Image (cartoon, rainbow, N blue to C red):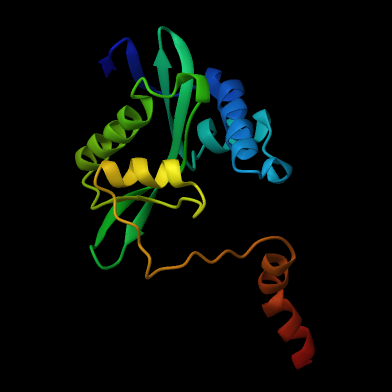
Length: 171
């Protein structure tokens, strides 16, 4: 997909270093850099290993990688179809304004339609007004009646170990 010297392409294993760079830059922008523990080795395994868990598309302008979108399939029981969940969308600040964000989302929309998906969805930080405005400009609707919940770290470990704990207590 090319527009104004803009190219959107599927990432390859050789893109892992730039993908990690984009993740780190996005985390810094979101004031969450301290949470990034991803490594090139981990991304290589998760994105391009024996069983890839997510996919990445890269935006290039004049041959230089300027942004990415990382996504995976989810499933809607109500629709009875898969969807695409956009985990991250990022365009480097110096490259904003060339249309890369819109082209990445357009590519995902076309991919979703080609794969028979019922929707594309994502989360956005509530303070990120530029992103929210951009998403609304392309027709996305905020899901204000839904909240995101996350189980991670010690809470995830505790719940995962719950059955083992209950089995021991039952003795």
